[in-house]
Length: 283
Image 1 (tube, rainbow, N blue to C red):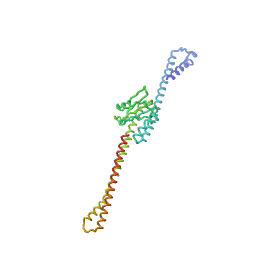
Image 2 (tube, rainbow, N blue to C red):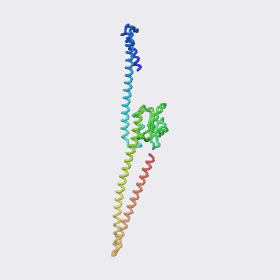
Image 3 (cartoon, one colour):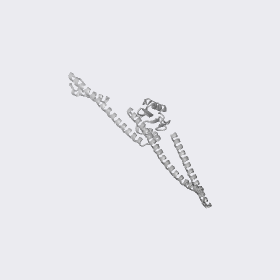
């Protein structure tokens, strides 16, 4: 605007000097020429103001377009992650890479850790993140160039993000936090579906194993039952009795082996359940 005003003033002086009589002087003899002179100056100043407004709107439009492109690129990266731990570790780094700034941090309400873009990014205080998640409202600290926004899903806050020295509008910051909240819930849903599918497949395998064990038990039981029935009947010689007792002994050993295998399988499954529970606690 000031460039336009200065040029308008110089053009007005030149108009007076070269076109308004008496020519070659800065004197104006006709009062109508004063009207023309001020109309020329006002028109130039108004045109400068309109040009400045158009320039500001163009700059704002370009900035909004760039922020939308960055949000799209950020959302594409989030869609590639399907593990909650990997997602929370990667999100702060993605924010700094795509949106710029000195650092970023993410806090999720059901976790105790604060996930930062780098180990050196300690300028974002943990207390401010927790307070933002509890209040559910964005907060700004212009003195330290910090911005905080809750991770909201509807009216529910599931965490908060903090940015240091990032040049994001309030609307883009709100969209960024919403994308992160949706990604967190999406990865949790994927993990829950995976666990449910794994439990379903494990139940199918357990049923198949139990059916197989039942079938394996039925064979020696049938042999033992038949041998015992024959022994209880009369008229068997000593060799026949010895053969039947041998069958009973072998089938009993076979049943004992099947019982040991079933016990080992149950112990192995119990250890796996304990291991999965301890991994969930560490996460």
